[in-house]
Image (cartoon, rainbow over all chains, first blue to last red):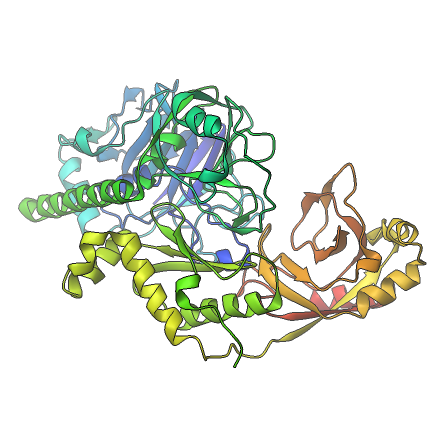
Length: 337
Length: 250
């Protein structure tokens, strides 16, 4: 089983949930920017949620399926079409042998995740299949995909095979088939063009001027063009400290909101360095990381203050919802038998 | 016995909703470093079931955790701690651990010797470092090779070691205009720090030489030559020795 990249799109990379356990060696985590979307895409094709898929950025690729494949697209809506027919997101889809997946304008969000039954089969490097672009490691030959790349799939799970068999009964040779069910919209992050992102005040929050603290919660911040997988850079009211503090570098994480001396906040994302030395004014609540991952350049973001307890409560709620979905998919499989 | 801060004095603070920071001090010191290393190495050998990973830094250890695994753990222990929330529960368990670690010593440091071909094309700023400090290039090499450097932490790039212990006599500010690409293995000086670039990176360091040794080895585990706690010594090799070395590695 494999797929062929006919056109690469703007930035298409192989990603899983990230490279954990080696940050202490200075190796960055990488992985899907919108981990929620990749997890769900994997579950929908019967994979373990940490399998490797494709992260597709803004301008999508043209992909040809060389064999019949079980696929799912989750995350940003980049107007995907299979043989010219729109593909719904958050569903299980059968892509017939020889079919072509294309993308159109970004309707909402900017990163779509393609999971295939069995996962994208690239070698595991340092615990992960994610592409680490700067070091040229992991993913497919350590780089973003180019035309002509052929990616193989791993072995499908029994659940994936059942899903494929049930969809195959409905599919014709040319057009694929979609599952009638989709993920409950209620459990999806509240993706928006200009999202409100919840932040937990960070370690150095109290060292910022009172006015800057207020500005963080009341002003809009624009996503600058220099934003990428490493971090989102913002421009808004400048955030000033009462007095500059010499910081000692320490570990950072996805969603850390750093403020360099110029006062313009940076939110660290999937390809962040492992440690940082700028004051940490806040930290994005984990449940809202997908919102940022789907925010386009130029968008306006507002921040809302929440407590650590509330962030963890929402995180547990989100994880329980994913567990419910997982259980539902398992029942679907047994009822089909 | 030395006076160690009581456990209550070691703050444990949240880093968002899925990590916590144990902070052993406010300045970069060997004493603090040893405590960081002791906790990090203990957790490497005996990880909590809810831990994702541990990252030691100059004065702190960051522990990344899985909220759902913590909840499961809490439920096993009767569920009383669950009402407080995952962070409080993790912090309490780490505090307890810190109590038991007080008298345990970290294993002895490894000594890693790194050959460097100083000057020439690979060390274009050796002259600058020398003239800025009123020294000859030879004296800079002598000073650079005569110290024991302590690896405080790894960060910035894979396998990049933050080294302590460079002589202030060869300290040199960064270049005003950073270079767009510095090849892997290049040895540099920035302020009172010295280091080796493990991968090709843009950077503003003053470049004094290059090592034929690989610092980042992604095909191995651990993937780096250096680890926090190591002692590094540089020694000077000729261009011929450098080339012979590279030939051998190939």
